Image 1 (cartoon, rainbow, N blue to C red):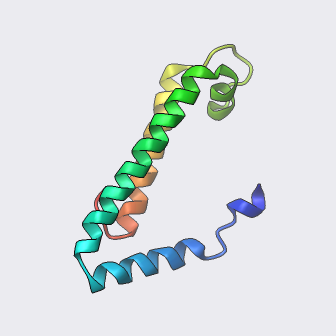
Image 2: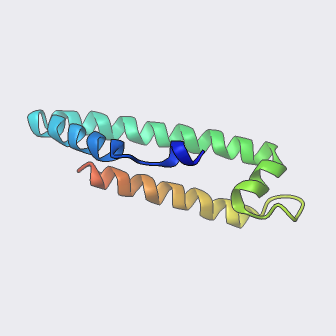
Length: 97
């Protein structure tokens, strides 16, 4: 898992490639931003479905494996963090989220 999580420069390469594409054709930014919003929306939708159906997984994700049932407020905060990180990544790409 740690090997997969290591960046090794791929993120910087992707940012440079996307920014270069947007500089060549600014209309690309709108389409990519729309695609990014759709991707994160689908991911959040699926994650919410799984969180609602799987208490054990929800507890693992929010770090509360000792209690039965997931804390809905903590799950909401987790989704807010995911959304904030998506916004940060889109900003790094030079696009609005």
